[in-house]
Length: 96
Figure 1 (cartoon, one colour):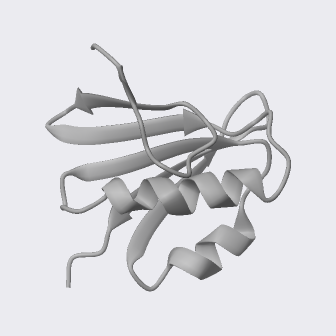
Figure 2 (cartoon, helix red, strand yellow):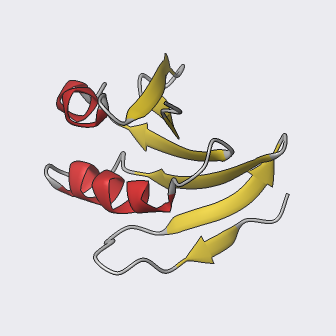
Protein backbone atom coordinates (compact mmCIF):
# COMPACT_ATOMS: atom_id res chain seq x y z
CA UNK A 1 0.00 0.00 0.00
CA UNK A 2 1.42 3.33 -1.11
CA UNK A 3 0.38 6.29 1.04
CA UNK A 4 0.41 9.68 -0.67
CA UNK A 5 0.40 12.99 1.17
CA UNK A 6 -2.63 15.14 0.36
CA UNK A 7 -2.42 18.92 0.42
CA UNK A 8 -5.60 20.48 1.78
CA UNK A 9 -5.98 24.21 2.32
CA UNK A 10 -6.66 24.97 6.00
CA UNK A 11 -5.35 21.57 7.20
CA UNK A 12 -2.57 21.86 9.75
CA UNK A 13 -1.78 18.13 9.97
CA UNK A 14 -0.36 15.75 7.38
CA UNK A 15 -3.19 13.88 5.66
CA UNK A 16 -2.46 10.75 3.64
CA UNK A 17 -4.45 8.92 0.99
CA UNK A 18 -4.34 5.25 -0.04
CA UNK A 19 -6.59 2.47 -1.30
CA UNK A 20 -7.69 -0.40 0.94
CA UNK A 21 -10.25 -3.13 0.14
CA UNK A 22 -11.67 -1.11 -2.76
CA UNK A 23 -12.12 2.02 -0.63
CA UNK A 24 -10.38 5.36 -0.95
CA UNK A 25 -8.90 6.08 2.51
CA UNK A 26 -7.82 9.45 3.90
CA UNK A 27 -5.95 9.27 7.18
CA UNK A 28 -4.28 11.44 9.79
CA UNK A 29 -3.07 11.23 13.37
CA UNK A 30 -4.33 13.86 15.83
CA UNK A 31 -2.95 12.26 19.01
CA UNK A 32 -0.31 14.94 19.55
CA UNK A 33 -2.68 17.89 19.03
CA UNK A 34 -4.62 20.05 21.42
CA UNK A 35 -8.17 21.29 20.83
CA UNK A 36 -9.47 22.63 18.55
CA UNK A 37 -6.88 21.33 16.05
CA UNK A 38 -8.22 17.72 15.84
CA UNK A 39 -11.80 18.92 15.21
CA UNK A 40 -10.75 21.57 12.69
CA UNK A 41 -8.61 19.14 10.69
CA UNK A 42 -11.36 16.52 10.72
CA UNK A 43 -13.94 18.99 9.40
CA UNK A 44 -11.51 20.11 6.68
CA UNK A 45 -10.71 16.50 5.72
CA UNK A 46 -14.41 15.57 5.53
CA UNK A 47 -14.53 17.68 2.36
CA UNK A 48 -12.69 14.76 0.70
CA UNK A 49 -15.43 12.25 1.58
CA UNK A 50 -17.72 12.46 -1.43
CA UNK A 51 -18.75 8.89 -2.29
CA UNK A 52 -19.70 5.68 -0.53
CA UNK A 53 -16.19 4.34 -1.26
CA UNK A 54 -14.42 7.20 0.57
CA UNK A 55 -13.37 6.87 4.21
CA UNK A 56 -11.64 9.14 6.71
CA UNK A 57 -9.62 7.43 9.44
CA UNK A 58 -8.44 9.61 12.30
CA UNK A 59 -6.54 8.61 15.42
CA UNK A 60 -7.49 10.71 18.46
CA UNK A 61 -6.05 10.73 21.99
CA UNK A 62 -9.61 10.46 23.38
CA UNK A 63 -13.02 9.58 22.01
CA UNK A 64 -14.23 12.71 20.17
CA UNK A 65 -17.83 12.89 21.40
CA UNK A 66 -18.39 16.54 20.29
CA UNK A 67 -17.32 15.54 16.77
CA UNK A 68 -19.97 12.83 16.59
CA UNK A 69 -22.70 15.35 17.37
CA UNK A 70 -21.43 17.69 14.68
CA UNK A 71 -21.16 15.14 11.85
CA UNK A 72 -23.93 12.61 12.57
CA UNK A 73 -26.46 14.16 10.18
CA UNK A 74 -24.32 13.55 7.07
CA UNK A 75 -21.75 10.94 8.11
CA UNK A 76 -21.56 7.50 9.70
CA UNK A 77 -18.73 6.79 12.12
CA UNK A 78 -17.23 3.79 13.86
CA UNK A 79 -14.95 4.20 16.89
CA UNK A 80 -12.43 1.65 18.08
CA UNK A 81 -10.35 1.97 21.24
CA UNK A 82 -6.76 0.95 20.55
CA UNK A 83 -4.43 -0.85 22.97
CA UNK A 84 -2.62 2.47 23.49
CA UNK A 85 -5.83 4.05 24.81
CA UNK A 86 -6.16 6.19 21.68
CA UNK A 87 -9.24 5.97 19.45
CA UNK A 88 -9.36 5.17 15.76
CA UNK A 89 -12.47 6.70 14.22
CA UNK A 90 -13.54 5.72 10.71
CA UNK A 91 -15.98 8.09 9.03
CA UNK A 92 -18.01 7.50 5.87
CA UNK A 93 -20.69 9.46 4.01
CA UNK A 94 -24.31 8.59 4.71
CA UNK A 95 -26.02 7.37 1.58
CA UNK A 96 -29.61 8.58 1.54
